[in-house]
Image (cartoon, rainbow, N blue to C red; front, side, top):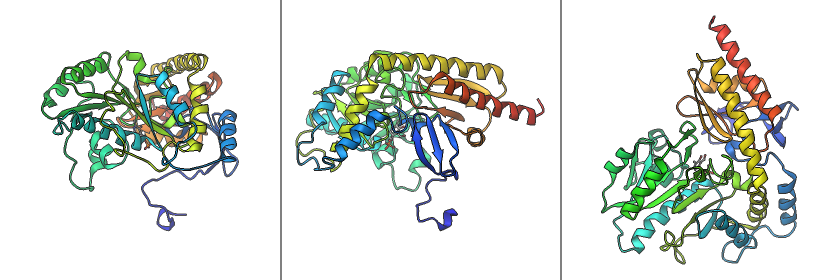
Length: 398
Ligand code: PLP
């Protein structure tokens, strides 16, 4: 079907493959061709495709109860919230269906905090160039990417942006009368798989403390054990006041959350926010089972080990192809190769070799495989990238 014949809104331009089955790190298309999945639904299928432990949780719950809405207590919500609280800085959790909704809640919470503190004019939220927080109005304004804002009317007031890593630029944006919060991805995903420079998160923490503003971490992509710690910011030993998570925490089932300290959440009283589906019984069954796996010390240790192996393999690619690879970026199993050629072209060529990867801003080839990927699968991926790069070089006559 050509895009013009399709009943789908043409906001995506996917390749022709239609995947119909998945197991672990593998996907099969309608023709029966088998692919190595090194992008995992954009950092979602943390435990791989159709993991038995999540199938069991989902199937058992599906046979009992699907939905009642938050007008009633939902079994599993307090259990999962307690797990997040025990494994983080947070005291309270609100469950959502997606990362965007988690961000929306986090931003609303930041403004409500100041309003509840008697300072309703404190609405300024400082974000960073290259960030991505989702596609709602608040999320596109928080990220400030011109191409996502284009045509959707005037920018919302109170959203400011600084270059990623530039603390002086952040300071220059602060008006103490209107400063509410800073929002940052500890590892930028869409923007080019960039880790915050050493000391940057701590410097932001100090600025927020100085001005009684809130620090919000967007761990939608980099959280859920993807970097080898449950939350990516643990590497920097800096705690936020509010955090948004999604993607990997549901392992493929739509689930997100925003969580906060009691202090940061003080404005979010009865009626201040809500959701029909957020934290429904199916999501809670899967979310509890997923978090039990993702938070096991031996699971995290293995992610760190395999991440080191991936990092070394990518450095090897860079050494072998200095004319094509500029930089190896990211953390854990959220990695990027900054290329001197078009990553989308490389992505398409890898697909013909039955390896699926992503791309990101700044000319980056993005890798976000299931966290259960093994050394043999990493070798298969790296060999495929090597072969694609070698073909480029021989075409270029090098
Ligand atoms: N924040 C970050 C860092 C993301 O990478 C994404 C999605 O890619 C979002 C927020 C939005 O999440 P969702 O697409 O689940 O709404």
